[in-house]
Length: 487
Image (cartoon, rainbow, N blue to C red):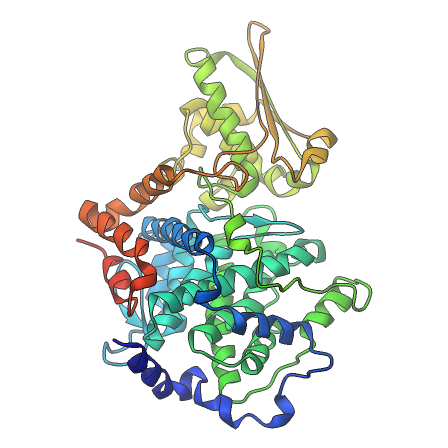
């Protein structure tokens, strides 16, 4: 499909996607030139992002992130939360507008595909990580980007633009506000960010996207109770469910629905209790944050990457003597311990709690010399030898480690054996971190491991090739097609 044909198709989508409605918006809704709100500034920033303005390094980074993200989605297609999510998602006739569910290939609405695919992306806890004031997983915006671009008949370049909008908008929110500091989950960003992703895919104007941003954002602040104590399946849909609903906010804005444009100021001033006007988003079209995303080596919470790597290192040193372990001390930054070493994490009742458990993850890595999805899938954390190690483990905080952050991501594991000897391993920056990135071979190997059971060896190779030439695709159908289960 040529560029002219794609634009024509977008015009035909105007009613639902909010493209034709832009022309009928009253002048009173135009962005204020004198004092735009933060949502208006963010929407202008999103509207200004264009493929031709992106450096080659950013485009390469996006392709790498897409490969990593779709691998973990394919690895989760048979998980229980994903099965439940797909079961309640409606089917749409192939001849109607909509988008495709990864794995099954079923055609549904853009919101439905964003929800199911986003749940797949999140479930394994293998997400990328961006952190400054807060921690976020911006690859969760890839599911709504794909769904909305597919609905619009957009190109590979359109997809890259929409993904960059999602990454940059969420990361720049992360730069100024830590949602957990105000008792909210980082997925609270979804309501503000996903309407911008959808609006970019649908070629909405900046004024329309601003209203979509606040219509979604004001509705989807998420309680941080999702990460407290014993965790639940809700962890897998924190971003995907809000994101799916935020697509509706973008549609409403496209039809002329208005929203509270000062919502971000209200959040900053009233909830975060910052001085009025003291928080302002950095919105330069440069220093692309998507190039600074870290990838995970292990399918566990981001703070656990370093201690798990240290435990794997100790396994190699102590192989054959691990039955002599009498004590383990895991030392981390104090602020990290609340979510990864509270009492529930010393006897995790389910996978969701185990992959956020410092003692359980260290124990499995130490005894097995690895930490993989398969260990969680078969509930290795319940085995007697792991439970015995949990009872010998202490978690402590260290101000020294705290002072080394964020230049380092440090963790220290110390082991005492029955003969009185002590052994230690310390990791300053875990492999996969932006400061110690994977090479391309490692990124590809991770994709193969996750995707091959779903789409086969040939499918994996095709997917790698399609993603590598993403910017040349007239539509994203070749990518969608290769993400269907092979058997």
